[in-house]
Length: 177
Image (cartoon, rainbow, N blue to C red; front, top):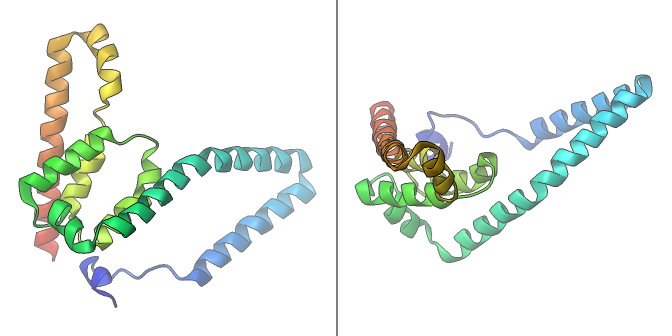
């Protein structure tokens, strides 16, 4: 069991064999559906292709970010910036990163897993995920619809909520460690 596995309560990493079995089941399902229900199978294949093509750009950006992170940020630096012991400074940095992040949330999961593996804290990762609810480019529209007071209030409350959530997640992790 690795150090990361021990931190995750002894959870095991999925084996490659399991992934290949799953892939085989998916391919077999497609073949069966294509043989017995060709129209449905072709429609499913078209949808799968469409989703896959929509994922290429976000996942490519994430892999590029992972590459750059691994090249330029050493694990010790990541731990200092957003590590479990980075405190309020790390949480504020995570909040800023969450607010500025763009794209679908699932595209960020591999990068966040890497950050976690390099010592990033669950509190700071939680702050990042929660902070994504604040979208600076949508604030003008929100102000137009709801006014300054509401927009500033809800934005401030979301930011505070992100920090509180991060603190709670850190407390939960420390309690179960």
